[in-house]
Image 1 (tube, rainbow, N blue to C red):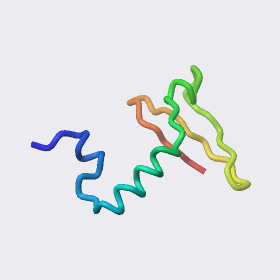
Image 2 (cartoon, one colour):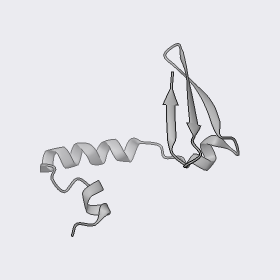
Image 3 (tube, one colour):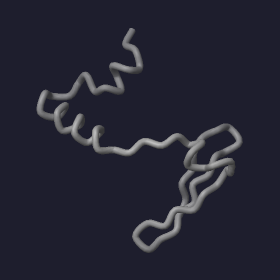
Length: 66
């Protein structure tokens, strides 16, 4: 049985792909949903002139709508 970590790390990737992925991950900014939502269940995101709503459902999933 394969664990989730190795699957998420992309064990299937080629060596060149793995280097590109490592560079992308190193430059990505990570925030927790708690930081992002700051006690609310819905936020609005302005992106390229459009407004999106990101909300937490009753079952704890995230839904993004335009």
